[in-house]
Length: 175
Length: 165
View 1: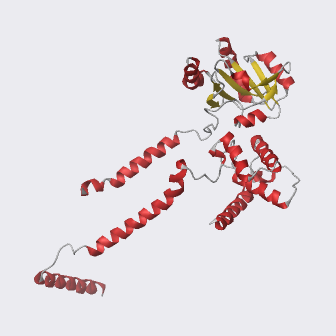
View 2: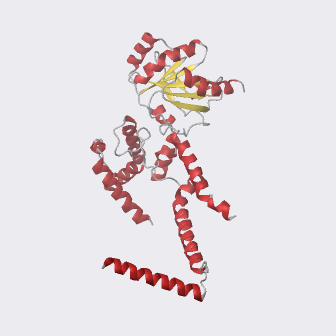
């Protein structure tokens, strides 16, 4: 018994060290999303191009990605080619043009290709605020019932897609 | 309980605003009343900017902080209570936006941990001290051994005294 007690400080140290080590590996910029497992917020915003009214029923029927982007966002330029590639591979993506100039957004899509089925124009950033967007780009996986299942903050590239987003997307594709 | 905490928060935020160069870059708003202005000030100081990690809404220049300040003011003007405003932001940005964590199962350890640690440490000290006081002397010298020891010690004293001279 006395022998075991000798090791108590060492054990406490090892547990603490392990916890702190795990903490080091976590990205403090990654916020747990408050909206995961909640439906897409209610919205009524125009579509880019023809101003058709869009609302949350857009996300019904089949799972898709929601990509938050803007022309003022440098990282969005980096991820755009991969989005085009994904769209070509048949992944449905809806764009949210966040606090942006629609004319500039149209030019951007004309120049670099349009990976989006629809682009929601959110000039004021109201839907962005309801989604808890704090920086573009962000990408959400939304299931066939319009419920948010995953959120990725930052550039979507092949690695992020393969390791984090695709598994969730596939999971919700076959209910 | 409430007052010292407020004083502390005020002192901290005063320190922070003196510190951070971004503190001056806040929009100009017209407030309906001094009370409204005060509530706004307290709220944006207690809410954390989601983008910039270690700044509150009041101190941050990030676009999202500007948006959220505007949002807080909009909700204030709609007559929402402080709790409703905080719930609104937590519902969108999560518990992360709170600089003062809520009292909920996930934060029990956070709130109680330091106190529990302090109590545990205090108890340990008390126990150790008591045990040492109560413990019998490790070895008891009999009369002869004690006499020898005293003699040796005295000799040693004499020697060292002699050395010094």
